[in-house]
Length: 184
Image (cartoon, rainbow, N blue to C red; front, top):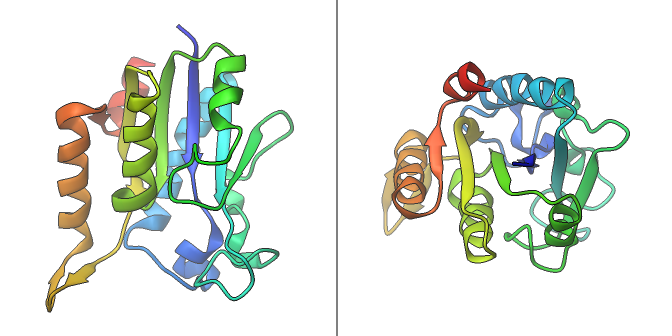
């Protein structure tokens, strides 16, 4: 089985320490755990893909050419690691991600990143729709934010848990990074 790590949108605008434009709850902690997973993949010489969301200048965050759009230094790509530039929530839309994974005969996906309720949800569901059946989301390597709808605010932890529960129900294995590392 050929495995790939996909790190989604771990970009400076999501981090308080980087004075980001769109800070998430728990992004620093999630990134620190992602670093351990990334090290594991690099040590085993397994495929690593970094997804980077770019908005045009004037966008809400991740503005093209800005420091906020840069991938966080803690998980910065090294030579040989593909950077997939996307302009949509779904990492497969108008990108070379699917072709890159297929070129490397990837059968197992391990997904980390941000935001749980948007891009992580989207890439996981799309992966399943595109035929990948062995998908793992490392839930503590993901982060999100409080959401407000119709005058009610739902805390980030509850948003995250709801999305992880939905993904686990029909799309992926959802586990912690420590569980993953203990078996891999």
